[in-house]
Length: 254
Figure: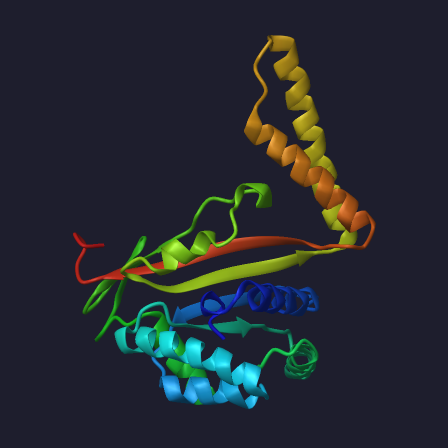
């Protein structure tokens, strides 16, 4: 499903289901987004198979029209892959089975990629033709590419949909989000430390007669809310690193 093409209710339901799926993963994982080149008919047929009744037919008519238009221009179509690893093959198989069952429980269509699809996914991440030369901060071949890592920000400072504009930028190919869920004890310690830092900075600012810092207030609010949620077992804390792979015809364009 392309959540940008559905209504608010369907979008919220889809995002909630995905959040619950991610919440069921108890180990580090990676979310990889790549440009998708697919037959719109195949995608729409798969969508129709999962719904019944006149309502889904009417919804799919509008959805399909916009999706076919985007597919013809190959704009905004992406494929998201969830990557996990393990220390051994049996452990990896257990993780795979658990993820597939969790996805089915939340109504998310998911399947394991075949070996050929994994190789194709790797090639799609970087489309440099011919032999490639790896230099500090640059990969060059038929084209050139580099990786960008945005600085870490607190959740209160990240607006919903912040990645959409970046994905629509020319040259942005693969986007990887490396996620590490924190255990309860680690999360409580992490947030308590941040909260103490904020309070110490507030005291120092008050002694100096400085004005209130909105940035510091956001960190304090986020740390307090996150600490309460973790303590009540109503939420989890994740450390996320985002990497954007940018590709261009030459260094000047890059």
